[in-house]
Image 1 (cartoon, rainbow, N blue to C red):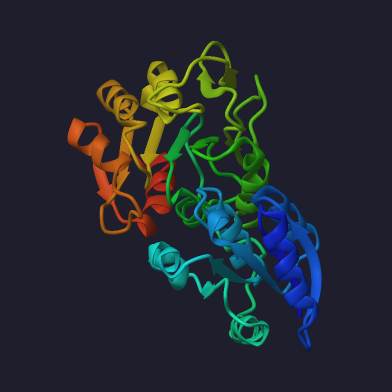
Image 2 (cartoon, helix red, strand yellow):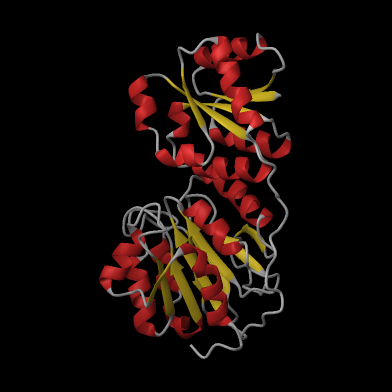
Length: 330
């Protein structure tokens, strides 16, 4: 079993590496200091297991890394510095098959922890999901998606049924600049549609799902002439850049052609924009509370009056596609 170590502290990283090198039936792979390095190495040279420091596991970007691990069948052990730290780790980590151990664990205890998660691993199918490629869509329709905390998993579930001819789709997911390209590749891996980072002035065409890149620009819909995406410099909006509000508000002039969904996330980014879209004639959907990891953004949009339909996550992908289909009159 080849093991990668991710810890931002040189001393702890070296100590963990020395421990792994003492283990029978375990070999040491890469040692990295941040989640971005871990993502790119796991994607190009997947290890069988990864040891991640608690401090890195607390970062929002760990969600993206964990989704890659799930797709590739990589198992994960989080090492906590204190018992209190172990107790504060999100319960969702355990549900995702992540093992948690203490930094004072012996070499043999750490080895047994790695072997337990390794033997419990299930091969994941990283190929593209089956989609309803028989669907046909109204010309000129546009899908907009906004998400934050918990949004990576939610977006995977929404996009996994998107067919190769899906309506043009724009996404704002709050994440760090170094992770947007990896997130685009992860979503592309799990969808029959083509998912890429958006480029300024790129035409919006069927079969293309464009993700807002980094944290330096807002992603917007350019509505002059043929629809294009626009990357606009500017201050934070609703506390974020890129902002879901910026995306939604930019599409108000073509709202009758839009189906917009707001997914799990903290705060209220997207609420004002969704209300404006709804008032202008767009079909608007909010993820329901039960299936939201954080029912913040969908709640704010609903309470403001911008959500037409509240749906569970596993219904949203089908709902946005059907709203844009030739059979839909909505």
